[in-house]
Image (cartoon, rainbow, N blue to C red):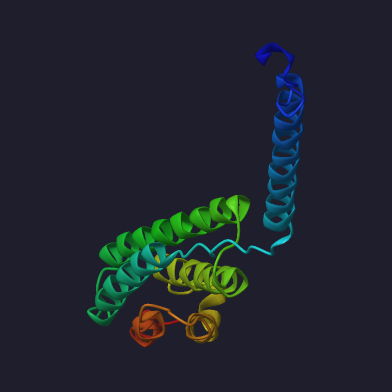
Length: 185
């Protein structure tokens, strides 16, 4: 009879389900292992963010220094220093804005040539301070510091890789010295 045939060669569905579940669990475990490996690999890779450049601020300082140089060269003995003082104040404002941008950028991350830039901005601040003092009062006690501060500012800007022409823009302080001599200083 046909009913007496053995059905042992047909596997039970439970066994197949169990093996499919085991196989899916092994694949999921392998995927988790690969994900953990990628996370550890990405975390251990040294990544240095690109340094922030303050070239727009440096270019603005250079533009105001060039305008100041033109104004100082136009000074003649016995001429008024009012326009030159206005230009010095503008240059001081641009320098202060660049210093503020440097401080902000340093708090956010790495800045390209930050030490050199801070040094150049500091030397430029000292030069502009002495220049403003001498223009306000040609007999100022610090009038002898004008040339050394100008040369120090030039050297500090020249140390930067991309100084936007600032070392050449710091000029005209000789005309201020002539003005001081004309005023009896």
